[in-house]
Length: 278
Image 1 (cartoon, rainbow, N blue to C red):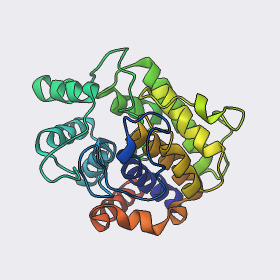
Image 2 (cartoon, helix red, strand yellow):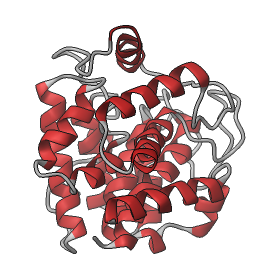
Image 3 (cartoon, rainbow, N blue to C red):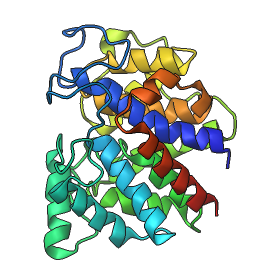
Image 4 (cartoon, one colour):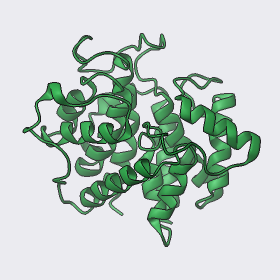
């Protein structure tokens, strides 16, 4: 495993989430152009606070570190701890920005212990916004696709979302191998026609459009989040894609250090990488 690329996709997720959250739910170009970490008026937060995207990714990493292995039930239980107690939230003691499908699914696990939640129409971004830890953890298992699908199915049990996870994994495979993906739209798609909704299919496409039409992590993340709409998740997905290609060293240090308690986030990421490499 290329540690710089693996760390890049994890930090790219967190940075992309925090970078995009200030303008989420806005229409394309109905907001000030974001070029740096800024305060989030949506939730009344200072710059650098991650949302549910980052928290759920950290829950997967935290479970792996504590258990020393893949443990689906423990990942689900950690999601419950986040939802109920704000564990690994950027707001101490409180989860926030929780999508309906995620809320219903995590609540269902807490009530019944079900590890498959949601339904075919559960096609939002909940699985792909947190995808990189699942992808890296799955590489240690005999059937990586099965593991990635199981973690996705905790909240979004949909064949469409599973297929998006498969496409996402194939992009990360290429980038981890040092090849630039040719998947997804490029400059032939005009910006105003890029779909910024919270549908998993379109979010992966929007993130790939931003990657395919730019030449650096910084330029690409700015292009991704300024699409508006579900901008934090578009940013998080772009960050994973670009982080895996450019590596952690290409993420602007000022953005990493703008993230709340960035040293603690970095320590969790390092412990997670130690575990999956071990």
